[in-house]
Image 1: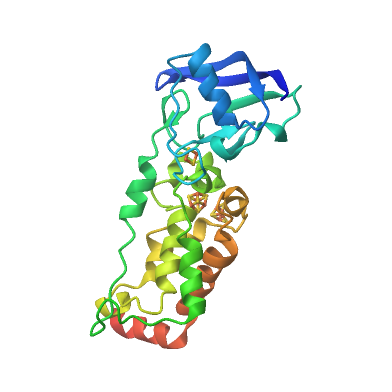
Image 2: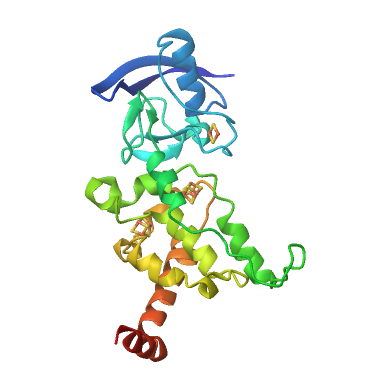
Amino acid sequence: MSTYDASFRVWRGDTGGGELTDFTVEVNDGEVVLDIIHRLQATQAPDLAVRWNCKAGKCGSCSAEVNGRPRLMCMTRMSVFDPADVITVTPLRAFPVVRDLVTDVSFNYAKAREVPAFVPPKGVAPGEYRMRQIDVERSQEFRKCIECFLCQDTCHVVRDHEENKAAFAGPRFLMRVAELDMHPLDAAEETGLDRKRTAQDEHGLGYCNITKCCTEVCPEHIKITDNALIPLKERAADRKYDPLVWLGNKIRRR
Ligand code: SF4
Ligand code: F3S
Ligand code: FES
């Protein structure tokens, strides 16, 4: 078993500000960044705040930025770095810091609440729902989401633009809108809810210019851009330029 001393720079601070603090810390074979943060807590910085739960890449709690890249600390192996590297660990940049590596991600819960839930089809009892396999698989891909919010953190629309947050749901929740809009049993339209229109007008779909940074950081390898955002954009555009919809809107406006 090999062991070496790594150089870590960890952001320490709170809502009032903070700074990077240097540590030299032991690393052993097979360890991940979260192990090293735990060793720092155990040996040098007992009050270092970090959020985690599963240490298995499934709870989505240990999100942080490692050398500037949004990552799950529990799934980032130390073996991907050179022992001579200085490893910088900072809190998610798009969300307000609570303390040290813990951020306030309530923006995401607020955006989740803004997406109206699945509307069950009338006259079909639970257990009687039937869908094509391709539709099942689409939902299953999106439902692998562990709500780590790395995609929300990395998207340039909000990463450095606090002012865009009010109008933009972010990739995770636009993916939710896409899932529901493409769900063959969702009866939202029968209640007057037009998910394509709300994607544009209320969830800020137009802000996304398909840079795919969200897809690149997703630890579940969900093809957020290709399978959710681009199809949703196409469906919203089809609807906008559909001559029947255009005529209907014109008549309604009279
Ligand atoms: Fe995390 Fe991927 Fe879900 Fe975004 S879509 S919150 S990156 S698991
Ligand atoms: Fe942002 Fe992803 Fe679109 S990173 S711009 S939501 S493709
Ligand atoms: Fe659960 Fe990292 S601790 S995803």
